[in-house]
Image 1 (spheres, rainbow, N blue to C red):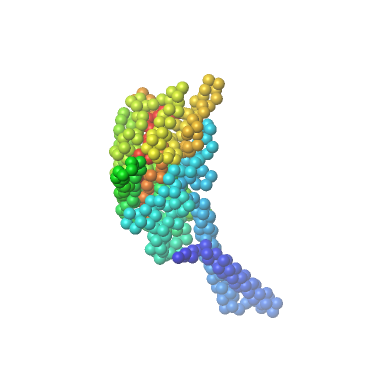
Image 2: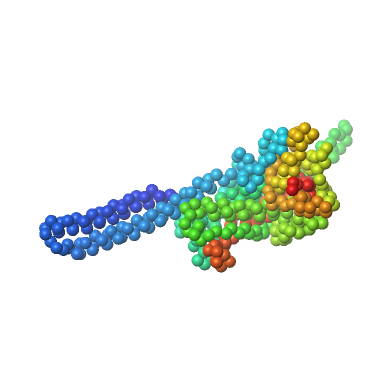
Length: 477
């Protein structure tokens, strides 16, 4: 059920403000009328009791006006927050292409983003059989598990939102105690949606699975049924599909945002800024977890040691492939892999067709900005940019700089990784509550506070053969 907020009270607040202003003006006019009346009668004084009564009425009206104006200011912040949240886009590629943290690169003959592979796949909770994934046409709040979660906590959320009006005011209140608090679902869901729309891996098409409990299981097909011709009179060989499940176990991920006390107190759009800052910080950590969670050093000067994303971080794509499908990890030559002038696209094609040979549909390339820059900087003998092969011309290429450049043997600070695959096979579990805590002492000498948000979820690759990572490709300097 929808609970009214302070924005819904704006018409009534404005009517009350107009009434208070009328009473203030009437009291002020009444004092003036008493003074004029006394002067017309030649009196040296006015009835003091009547004047004090009118002045008391005027001060009461002024206090009421101040209170109502503050409430209307809060309502204005909340309205701005609602407007900013209204453009939260559904899963997969948002309308018009990926958001500010990633970009689609045509790299030659490309014509723009294609529909992510597996967009219509139906994942189901193993215990109930109900759809588990947030669909491409859904926000998190549209999913049945999210609606049930919101209904369960509606009364708690109503008390918080009616008291504080917006998330910035909520944070202001927490600065006095430095306590942790649960973010109401009306505020948490848009933050989570913005984070997943900003996370490049989610733009590539990862499947978002709301988690009603700490541990959930998602059914999956592990062996496809096969067909075969038979001779007349011979028995039919049975070939049934095989199923098991993917288990998601929620672990905690934190994101830290720092803001000045003055900003939190004075900025009229503080709700929007706080929401955007938390969601962007969450998106960066989410991309790291999806791609590199639990990755340790696997070679000379490897980037894994620098990440420090050990357990309880979820196991990311690369670590999952190294453990369960090592054949899906290509490259990682002793000195990295430099592009050959005559055949510069061979490594990209190898990764693309490795996915296709597993009967999967490649959805998008994901790399750092340095890798496409390397290809954009390559020209033929007539100084024309090298044409991208037709087979991969329309495959979206997204970039995120959480994918680092590292040293691999003699390839100094230029080696980087490329991911490609059916991203819908990457399941990102999402607990629907969002906790925040305010760090008041750590930044006190700077007049700032830290806002630490706790995201809980998991990452699992349903079919490792659907993903490929080409390691230590040469990126631009």
